[in-house]
Image (cartoon, rainbow, N blue to C red; front, side):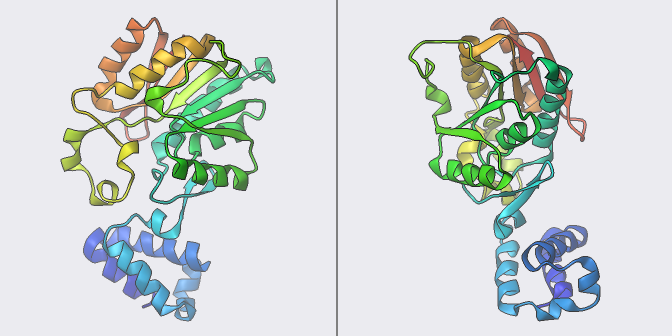
Length: 285
């Protein structure tokens, strides 16, 4: 099976444009062949058995990032597998928003500037912030030890220092390491589960059947579950004038703004993503 045969087979499931893009990614990432190489017929040297196995997985709509074991995020290549969500462009925008805001006050950032990433998954947010805000001490939590193993590998590959801990977001510690409740974080950021169960029917199979449901879904009757818990924790551990940053479900923007306001957060701001969706929110303690 060559490049032409691969994309034509994938087109039965994905459509021609997406099939070609996926096929090019496979040959570039797995075999180191550029599009020019493909035009010159160098795909003939690739193991046919290997390509056929990849095609079989892709035809089942397994995400190409899982098939290849990697995904790009903010200029870095991260390891991904079925234990973590595939990093998405809107999460990149959330990171850039935080980095930009910190750049505005960078002269005031010292060694005590601390960031907490709640529900880190692949570590994409924590690693990006550790790399782009070098003075920051970054801590990242996740309930899944398998996800944390991926995140640790990514931090090692990126050569950044992040402290990873296994923590259940719904049962977060009420005290700092020395046993007292302190205001220790300048920024708490989270891309928590925010898709309600009733949205499942409209989701693509490559997401619904392969990505970890614990990182995706919340009950229909409590769509703000994780935001409420994280914001409540922020009331205890955010420094005065510290910031919460969230990736959000556009369906619940008004409800989340009202929730944060009722919890005495202020300067609440919503930001749209590149597709015009209200996808990010920040609030100050």
